[in-house]
Image (cartoon, rainbow, N blue to C red):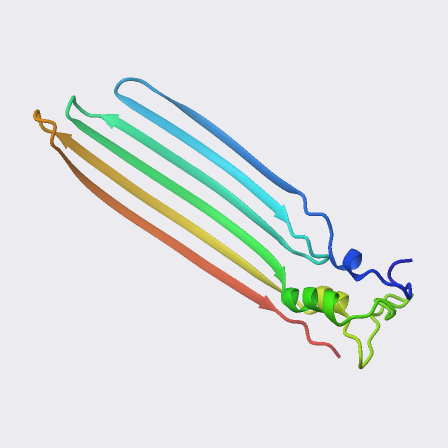
Length: 178
């Protein structure tokens, strides 16, 4: 099989197809006085490396517009986003080693599933699958409001208020080997 063949194609072992899903939903409506729009989105993309790696995002958005009078308008917008990403710790080094230093004559794995190793050859498959991963999560909240007043001569006065927060959590996992 491809894992224990002496003519190992490390590109086939190190990369995979990466499906992606992007699903939006939107509802909107209103009248001459006010409009409201609510939307949501789910995005998921698997990584191309043959190890646990992906990006996922959930987004919710709300937008409202009000015509308070002929001259005065107000807007309010809210965005909530939750993003998650997992990537192998040694991804860049392993990809370089696949292309540069590992000959196809060195085994990727033995029939019992253990990884091959030699002083002259690096095993990028082992590094991708066994060196741990970095899990990141970002939570974003954004609110902005706008009030506008128009004078009869066409001059407009506007006031804007914005607030945003982006929270980040990283977990770097590296296993210890006996």
